[in-house]
Image (cartoon, rainbow, N blue to C red; front, side, top):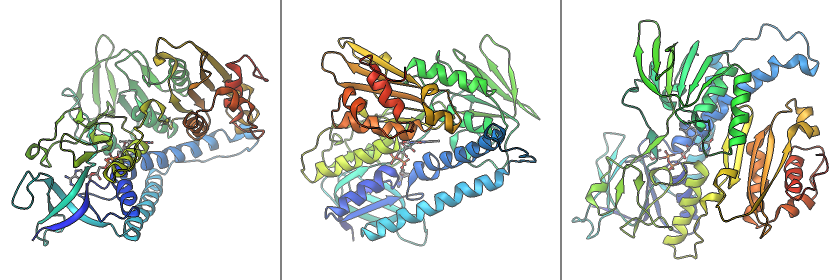
Length: 470
Ligand code: FAD
């Protein structure tokens, strides 16, 4: 006997569980099928664990720098990586319990097992019924027949044919999180967000780090100035950054790994991390039984996240949009609104805030200088954190804010930041863009003193040549 439900969500990661809660709040009967753990990549293998590790690295950096703050004799410091990992896990566990509690509170049925979408069958004349194979093997397979489906199956680390992942010597970000001991040295292939975050944290904890990036700069989607500042800052900390460099192969020796790079000397390192992006999960759960279109870039959807079968939606990392947790959450909420026939304003992906949790942090929203449409006349205002009192008090004077103003419309087109707490600061800019505020409104709004946010105010004023402290 098949069970009926209003909405079945395949995958209980960030996008999936948020969509489920929103749908349940709006009165739908919701079922989640999750084969691993509620919370998905972000909670168990992504955002939260990496930020927990980065926080330990930041504490260590601060203590190393204690003498600068007048705290002498901080000696005999050691990194206890086991304890760092334990702290990380306890944060994950606490949040995981929280997500489970939220699903329970919202009366969401959570089925622990693997779901596979069926084509038209005796259970339903249209595709979209889902067969669930339970993790608990003593339970019999169940068929759920939903009115609507949201696919939120996420993504998996991408590998390179010449660098096959074994998660022991050559690791993805998943394998890195399982390390029991820190390596002495590592080559990180890929200078995108995940690569630079790991580089920053491992360097802080004493690992010798080399980043190998194929393109001509780190964080290719950020402003070139910010990329340059980040590279300078990572190099100052002792990280070796090789750009325009192509890894040819890695040979695992008895005691180390030889990494061969085209036209350059080979490197010998203890571990290699491959951080070259993530592939959408589109295979292995029955899409071929439906007429949903998909390829290796992801599941094809319209602006309301409907696939080519209009009652089947797809959101998050498994579609070809920005692979970010807050994007997956928003897409989930919008898909639910569309299912409920509410008015939906499609998401403007340019205005999604982006954060990189390196030391120093990087964040941006809207356009960066390099991708402003050619027909727009812009003025870029800047402000260095060296002129910001709170940044000096905090102990970091590096970094800059860039604000882009449309000269004809006075619109705020984008803000990029490298510096302390950039990932928190960017929310002001994100809200300002959402509310259609102009840079002069940011400049005229009172910002408390001394705060790092004054750097955004000053950069906004600088787009009119009116910064006070510049
Ligand atoms: P996921 O969270 O991956 O969830 C998919 C879920 O589907 C999984 O739980 C999986 O088990 C389940 N599933 C798949 N197939 C099936 C099936 N057949 N049956 C049942 N269940 C299934 N984003 C940020 O915004 N900020 C960050 O700081 C950040 N840091 C990151 C750091 C790292 C190292 C990584 C890897 C990612 C990071 N991300 C970050 C990205 C973020 O984790 C993803 O964008 C987000 O998790 C996507 O959510 P999702 O719901 O689409 O997929």
